[in-house]
Image (cartoon, rainbow, N blue to C red; front, side, top):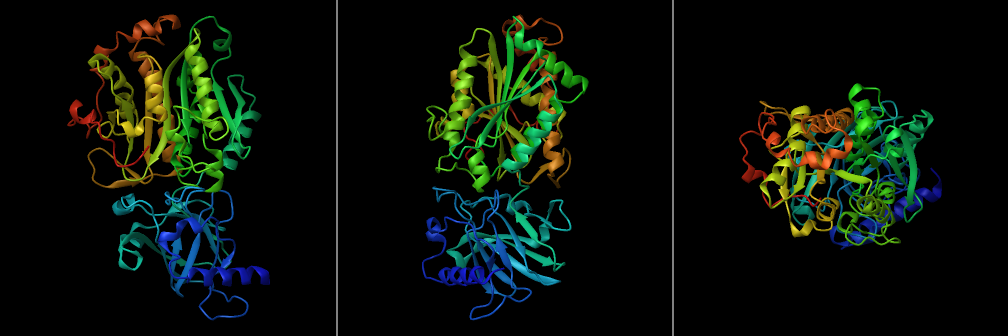
Length: 498
């Protein structure tokens, strides 16, 4: 640590004491803290062991300000999304220069949401230099409450004991999944030289980061004269919803594997996957917005090639397939994470015809049967006007009735097993397992509709017209059978803006 860094830290601390520089002045926190030394007021000289050093100047980092309360307590402020002070949820920062067995209380004081899974036992994740695997903090050490010291806003406090002096500790809202991690994953996939996997650059973000597109299918499908049946999957349009990347990777891992189901899917379908729609927001550590402050999932109707280039590129590709006589876009699934609900579940669109509704309900019902953490009773179908600019709503209105568009949500925290009342916290592996189950459900769906296993490809559209009766045979997972169609077709979504 250089003397200049220490002076910067002292200046930052003094600024944090200025009246009115609190929750109501979020726009002023446009940068992450950088190697910020937080020592007691009036302290001069080199920092002592136990004077914590905070840092969030790294990829996907987020921490805008630290206030010293005592040697054992600190108020932490989330940096708002770039160019948009409305959203303050995601945090990701490191702490070093700790003292062995130093106990502290960290208070996240400026969440932009009041409803949160922290009310239901959710806790932040932590790792350290010597223990690089992320793990959740014990729920008993986490508190979520209205705080009179912060304008009665909701505060999440967590207690932690630093047990090793030489470790650097990292805390985050949920398991991070960075742009660089995705690039390494895709580069490793390239090295396998699989003839049924093609990676292409669909476009560049505002900051010139890659918008990657994977095409996974047997090579013969790309040159065959038969109709090309396409499943299009997207993720990370909201950068802080990191579970969506783990689910998406689980889908990819399964589809490129040698599992017999994966081979059958590649033989009959073409999977198009854009695993990170908002690479700038991910890199910057935003929760919901892009570099320019846009919620991209409200701009599907008319994306700008310069302000929303990644969305524009994906939409143009989908329009090309829609207008092609050779392609049939059968499914569109956009993967998100939910901050107030448990389990995995889906949002779908509303059809006026009962038959179309029944057909649309088949896939989530079958996924419920395959995935113990997926809830059909939490799945809903709606036409909320506030969601008109989302991918699911826009494409649902653009494509014909043989195409099904869904938002797949997965909890930031946990899922409930049938017949139990205790929550099972998600892990990185559990998120990827949900992705694998999503992938294998496609084969179950097409077998039920008799289109993959029993019929040649060109008859798919006609065959779909016959699946409404079969949809009534799909069993629901225990816990969802008590819900009726009336409950599932509510026009109100769960309290989270997808």
